[in-house]
Image 1 (cartoon, helix red, strand yellow):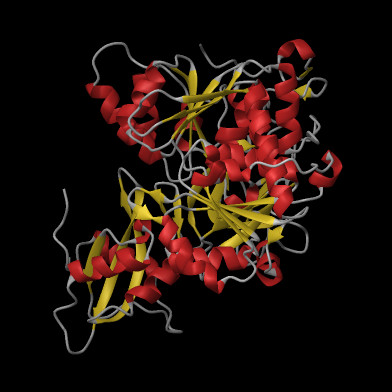
Image 2 (image 1 turned 60 degrees about the vertical axis):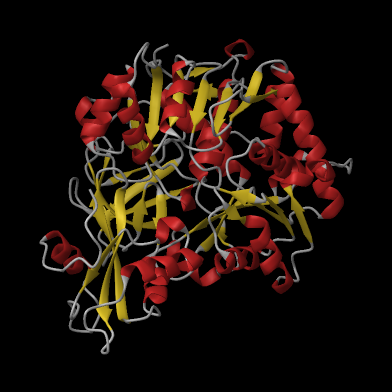
Length: 571
């Protein structure tokens, strides 16, 4: 089934199958007039929805109780577990009652688990219970988990026992004694104990409570807790799927981690707006994903470039009928034009590129079905409705001329409520006029399409994972034989970027440290995606006049082959 082309604005009716019947349904047309500077005002023609996550689920379940809502595909690609909308709502309401027996309205409830089917159920339950869901990366080590739970002020933790061989239960036991504010800890293995029958709050009470806390690495220091509203996550999912032209009842397949907004906002909530199916892969395996797509013709795939690269490798070698998709959504890391073209050819589909960040509920700009091939491969599209976007000079804040790079800024309903518990960081992120400064460099053309040029910060994006170099550098500097360390991102065809470490040797070990020993120690303290993939040795580092490291020059030295490798180059 093909993606529908954008249509003129119209009013949806109950027969359309959309749960927001009565609200204008727009194909997100281009602006009527070409821009004269790099500022695109918000398109507010279509009103925003006032749904909460829970009220949206209830409305869809009332209209389509027997339609398939959720299926979860096991690691081995075996028989999925499935829930209809009525079953999903009933399960979520039961768990919501159990949450309210333990915590009050507005409490923070953390979920630390891989992609298991209980993940979206707990997310819906939190929304129905009027508590804020704190989403946690299952790869967090003890210190990282402690920071996240303490920063978010979580009163309750729901956790898996194990993920990819990592003993999560043991880590929970190790950290909980130092967290007196964490009053309830429940393993997913004790699922029945999560059920309850406590009264649930009203829609109005829930709307006043933040929907989620998502952690982002930021550019320096420890991860920050991004507070997002129901209004933001519900409408970003809606407007993204409208922009894609997703058909009624579509199946949305996602191998993305649920603790990211791409997983729990776009992939999970998007299908609600078309009364469709959310197919969750419990673990990303390109062969399993390919077979799921092959049995789901016309599906929508949400992805990151790393996923597409691996999936395309499988598709090229596959026998039998190809998988045909209605659309593919990708972003979170730089997307090579060749990857977009290749995916479209292999799956007879259209690839849509997006740009966003956690602080903006994950999507700011999106390519559209009527975009030119050049727009689809060379830009990240135009802003979604209800968000204004501009490109400014980082030093003066003045709007840049068209085509001139500057910092990307956005303003609208979808931006973070705050960095939870960090007013100073919030003020640095959002200026006095309400503009959120992304820290990314881009340019804008006359249609409002944005082209990503780079980043103000030194954030590394590896396969959609944001990695702040600072904490990694601090740890590497403590390793035996290391005097100092700098961490940068270097280009990689599969991951977009990978982590590279440049080490200054200690005086007593001029030959440099033992890399195998360094990697072993990193595995004890760092999440796997933060561990450097390449290791270099340097006698000194390029510095500015004020003594700051010139990271751009470090990357150049790596690219030029000036710095010797400490580890054996990998194929």
